[in-house]
Length: 382
Image 1: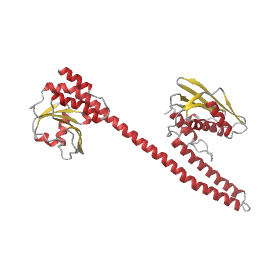
Image 2 (image 1 turned 180 degrees about the vertical axis):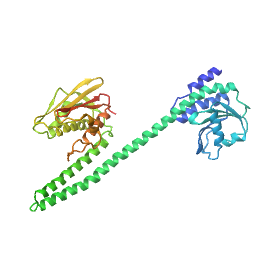
Image 3 (image 1 turned 180 degrees about the horizontal axis):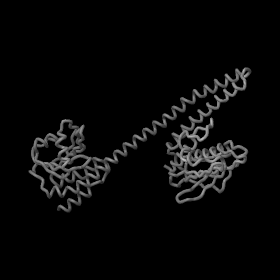
Image 4 (image 1 turned 45 degrees about the vertical axis):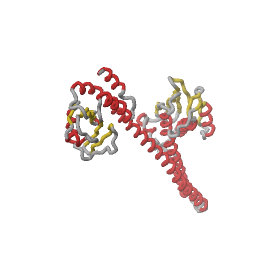
């Protein structure tokens, strides 16, 4: 019978990551098999004393006046114990106890488990030793439940924060763009009205204002794209990257001295068109922006790898010092004092690749050019 009970008890442990369901599964079975009348779990710290579970259920789980020192003394023993019903036990009990005895088991960080039998005068060593290993496993299952609850709370908190950040980015972009447009319009009117009296220095000043306004507009767009690029859980669908990149090159302003070529046919992959557009667009724009050669060349290619594809965008431009290989993917990091550079493009690239569980790395030689390698996996979308 003891072996059967041990088997039943062990099977009741860890059936659920829900704290109450976990307790119900084992403790109701123990109470039934052992003829117990009540039980509870006492969680305590230096500043509070609380019952996290009880049979029968109680409405008030806080006990500010309970004897924490007595609970701490039991906890420090770190072994199964039993006590007759005395005033010390009654002071820490959430239920009215008249007679009998209680067995107490240490649940470590989860507190103390009390099992009450109103008819017995004592718990035998055999009973305590029988239940000890079962309660130890039960403790592990409670710790798993606590970790799961914390994880759920963290995820809920992160989702809320992400939504708030996304909403904030939209609001800020709207609120900032409106005055920017007004400043740009006013500047344009002043420039036109004063065109007759403006000298070369005055014209340059107005051009500088316009350039900075355009940069601010680009920064706002970049921040909004960066903050939302991995938030929208759009459905993935098949995309012909050869067609997608060709469309990007056709629409964007590629200088006449720069030639963009495909080394091989790009694959058809599953993904989201907007994200992949941002990925290739920013890499190509970056390759054009930092190309100082009379005849610029940008090469795009790919190869199949296990579970997906590896791509590269190669240029024969200025190249990047190895010391800055990681810095270039950080927000607002631009290696040159370009008035039009926002320092966001490569951050967006990295975020898109991270969304698809891929990696990006750089091979570059100063004066000779750079090659950005990155991977996209068939089942990598978040």
